[in-house]
Amino acid sequence: MKKAVAYARYSSDNQSPESIDEQLYDIRDWAAKNDCEILKIYTDEAETGTSDENRDDFLNMISESSDMEYDYVLVHKTNRFARNKWDAAIYKKMLRENDKKVIYVTQPMLNEETPEAMMLETFFEGMDQYYSLDLAREVMKGHKKNARACKHNGGLPALGFDVDKETQTYILNEREAHAVHKIFEMYDAGLSYDAIVKDLNSAGYKTKTGNLFSKNSIHDILRNEKYLGIYTYNRRPHKVKGMRNNRKEKPAEQVIRIPGGMPQIIEQKLWDRVQAKINGRKKGTGEGERSRLKATRPYLLSGKIFCGLCGAAMVGTSKNYSEKKIRYDYYMCGKRDRQHSCKLKMIRKDIIERQVLEELENRYLNPKVFPQLAKELQKGFKNLGGESNKEIVYLKAELAKVQVKINNMLELIEDGAASKELAARLDQRESEKIILVNRLQEAEHKTKASSFTYEMILAYLYKEYEALKADDSLTTKRLLDRYLIKVFIYEEEFEATFKLFLYTTGGGGAYPVVCRNIIKAAKELPIPFISALVTYPPDQFSY
Image (cartoon, rainbow, N blue to C red; front, side, top):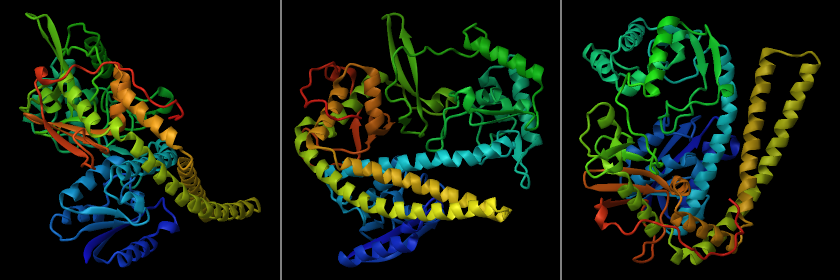
């Protein structure tokens, strides 16, 4: 008899059809039919599946998988495991390494160990993430309401501030505020980022997360308008895996700015002098930090390449060899660049990018398997449409019930029976309606997949292959964004994690999502990818 553990999750954005009890009913039913004993049940209530944060029992399950003896992790469907495809890939890899397989009990077509099942699974996970992102737009409405009242919207406040527990507005943290003022004064006095970092760390100051300061920390502080007393919200793009690009800002019309919305730490004159110096150095006036040669070509692995020694993101840099009159572009460990605390050597941009593209072609975009793959995908998409049709019927009925309740509440309000309790209940029903509408749109989108013909799917696969061979860096970058998750660089090897694999040139079969290979020297690499005439079926697939 096989052994298993079960995982069920009920989120605050979810309704009764997938409550924990009903998920466990289907899970136990699958276990009984497949002669499988459930050893332990893990559950998380009212938690989102978008990230692994705050899913305590889920993380316990992952941690205990290395010690417990069982075969399967039973889950209701893909969106109960995770609605973020990166988390899904990473945690399934961890479970596989502990000889555990994830089984989606209501999506049997995803449980087969075939390349086609992997591609179907990626499709489902992509749809689940689309739903989560769509729902996040509605959550943003509530955050903007808080922002207009200058309230804290979650996460860590900026260095120098704390949050009043009762009013949820910002208050000063005196010691941190002193550090912030010191940073501005030192920069105004002409000290470099390196000198400022050294002074702060030797004096025992820490960042808000309790870490040592780095050059990036200083730059972000010097540019933060909050120190002028200006409350800002929605200025940066949303975090991905706990990280955000602090150099990138949203358009001004999307940002909420309220002067006087929080305590002021830096006086206007000091702020103006510092900004003038930063802008002068940015323009290359020779006044400031060590300038970096700017890339003339895009870095294809940007945001996806990491140091295998310390885990930091790698950044692009360039180096001129005057005696040879040659310039090379490199990827460098971010910690080595900013803090000089990592010993990983730089790696040439062209060498690692070409090797990653080779892995993608050998293991996934292989035209030899496209005909059979297209047949299997068409079969899977038809099954997908059949499941979604049942869900659409249910969701439409639930939506009609919620709309009746909303109409009844509106009638009471119109008759003069308004109250805070009634308004709160109306807000709740409106939120339920938004969730149901989103889920209905998701289900309807899935049914469209059942109309994909064999020719359409085959054309899509050949288009992806053509994109791989195109002599166009933008096209190649988009292709890697679709298929590549991460690349880790070690002293002599690299490890690439793709969303799925198909076959290698050496034969057929399903492969893990992680590949590890030796970093080749430039002379060992084949001729670089160039434009090639690729024969493929007519353009019938729109994407």
